[in-house]
Length: 92
Image (cartoon, rainbow, N blue to C red; front, side):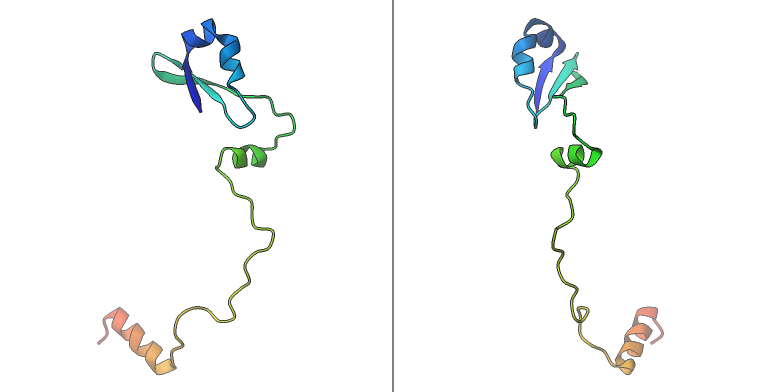
Protein backbone atom coordinates (compact mmCIF):
# COMPACT_ATOMS: atom_id res chain seq x y z
CA UNK A 1 0.00 0.00 0.00
CA UNK A 2 1.48 3.30 -1.10
CA UNK A 3 1.47 6.28 1.25
CA UNK A 4 1.63 9.87 0.03
CA UNK A 5 1.29 13.24 1.72
CA UNK A 6 -1.63 15.58 1.17
CA UNK A 7 0.73 18.06 -0.51
CA UNK A 8 2.08 15.38 -2.85
CA UNK A 9 -1.46 14.42 -3.83
CA UNK A 10 -2.21 18.10 -4.51
CA UNK A 11 0.90 18.64 -6.65
CA UNK A 12 1.09 15.25 -8.40
CA UNK A 13 -2.53 14.12 -8.56
CA UNK A 14 -2.28 12.22 -11.85
CA UNK A 15 0.89 10.40 -10.83
CA UNK A 16 -0.62 9.40 -7.48
CA UNK A 17 -3.87 8.22 -9.07
CA UNK A 18 -1.83 6.10 -11.51
CA UNK A 19 -0.58 4.18 -8.46
CA UNK A 20 -4.11 3.11 -7.52
CA UNK A 21 -4.88 -0.37 -8.84
CA UNK A 22 -7.61 -2.96 -8.33
CA UNK A 23 -5.60 -4.52 -5.55
CA UNK A 24 -3.62 -1.59 -4.10
CA UNK A 25 -4.96 1.55 -2.48
CA UNK A 26 -3.13 4.80 -1.73
CA UNK A 27 -3.19 6.22 1.79
CA UNK A 28 -2.99 10.02 2.05
CA UNK A 29 -1.41 11.43 5.18
CA UNK A 30 -1.73 14.82 6.81
CA UNK A 31 1.00 15.85 9.25
CA UNK A 32 2.29 12.29 9.29
CA UNK A 33 -1.03 10.66 10.19
CA UNK A 34 -3.15 8.59 7.78
CA UNK A 35 -6.33 10.51 6.98
CA UNK A 36 -7.76 9.25 3.68
CA UNK A 37 -7.68 6.16 1.47
CA UNK A 38 -7.91 6.43 -2.32
CA UNK A 39 -9.11 3.26 -3.99
CA UNK A 40 -10.43 2.19 -7.37
CA UNK A 41 -14.19 1.98 -7.84
CA UNK A 42 -15.31 -1.62 -7.87
CA UNK A 43 -18.95 -1.70 -8.90
CA UNK A 44 -19.54 -5.42 -8.45
CA UNK A 45 -17.71 -5.83 -5.16
CA UNK A 46 -19.68 -7.33 -2.33
CA UNK A 47 -18.55 -7.04 1.26
CA UNK A 48 -17.05 -10.56 1.15
CA UNK A 49 -15.13 -9.85 -2.08
CA UNK A 50 -13.70 -6.68 -0.55
CA UNK A 51 -12.71 -8.48 2.67
CA UNK A 52 -11.09 -11.29 0.68
CA UNK A 53 -9.11 -8.79 -1.40
CA UNK A 54 -7.91 -7.10 1.80
CA UNK A 55 -6.83 -10.49 3.19
CA UNK A 56 -9.30 -10.34 6.09
CA UNK A 57 -11.51 -13.24 4.91
CA UNK A 58 -10.79 -16.65 3.45
CA UNK A 59 -13.69 -18.44 1.78
CA UNK A 60 -14.42 -22.01 2.89
CA UNK A 61 -12.84 -24.86 0.96
CA UNK A 62 -14.95 -26.23 -1.86
CA UNK A 63 -14.21 -29.76 -0.65
CA UNK A 64 -13.91 -29.80 3.14
CA UNK A 65 -11.71 -32.35 4.84
CA UNK A 66 -13.54 -35.53 5.83
CA UNK A 67 -14.48 -36.13 9.44
CA UNK A 68 -12.16 -38.56 11.22
CA UNK A 69 -13.58 -42.04 11.71
CA UNK A 70 -12.57 -41.93 15.36
CA UNK A 71 -11.74 -38.86 17.47
CA UNK A 72 -8.04 -38.46 18.29
CA UNK A 73 -6.44 -39.79 21.42
CA UNK A 74 -6.15 -43.25 22.89
CA UNK A 75 -9.23 -45.23 23.86
CA UNK A 76 -9.76 -45.48 27.64
CA UNK A 77 -11.65 -48.03 29.66
CA UNK A 78 -14.17 -46.87 32.22
CA UNK A 79 -11.73 -47.57 35.06
CA UNK A 80 -8.97 -45.57 33.38
CA UNK A 81 -11.31 -42.65 32.73
CA UNK A 82 -12.43 -42.65 36.38
CA UNK A 83 -8.80 -42.67 37.53
CA UNK A 84 -7.95 -39.73 35.25
CA UNK A 85 -10.94 -37.72 36.47
CA UNK A 86 -10.05 -38.43 40.11
CA UNK A 87 -6.50 -37.27 39.45
CA UNK A 88 -7.68 -34.05 37.76
CA UNK A 89 -10.08 -33.29 40.58
CA UNK A 90 -7.47 -33.95 43.20
CA UNK A 91 -9.51 -36.70 44.83
CA UNK A 92 -6.52 -39.01 45.24
